[in-house]
Length: 176
Image 1 (cartoon, rainbow, N blue to C red):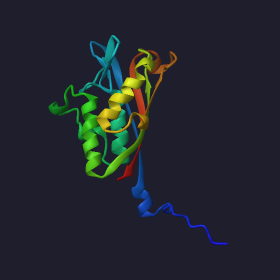
Image 2 (image 1 turned 60 degrees about the vertical axis):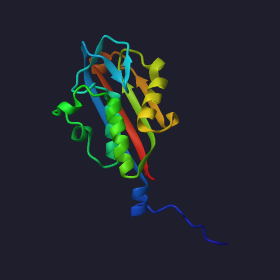
Image 3 (image 1 turned 45 degrees about the vertical axis):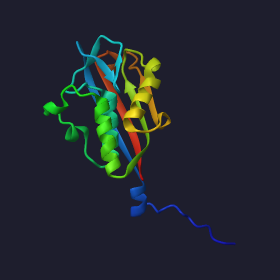
Image 4 (image 1 turned 90 degrees about the vertical axis):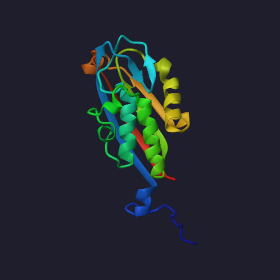
């Protein structure tokens, strides 16, 4: 009987390491009166928003960090420093579009993005599909490659008291 041939590159083989890359990102912002609550460029109906140098879009920022991590390009602060007037009040969507270009230059394609938004109010369920669409367009991928979930803090901790928005995200990249 012929011996089966494993066509998959071996773990530890450089070819395997260059095939797929995974990254993790997180972001949180304190919620304060007088700021707009923006999540991937969508204004959410709420009386508080994130304190931040840019628009404080924690969802876009966490996804940026996940993509940068997967590409081994550092973090969001390195690319969009809060000390730079250039990035003052800039939309998180612009950050995502910029990263799309960096990934293309390095011949890296997004396989998928998965993010969880933790916020007590407002309820995000009615907005999730629009959020996925905005993110997909900014990244130049299909909506089916993006998952966004919303969780409340159930009244517990900083999220549950409505003090912060926190987001965690993972991204998988592959070579073109």
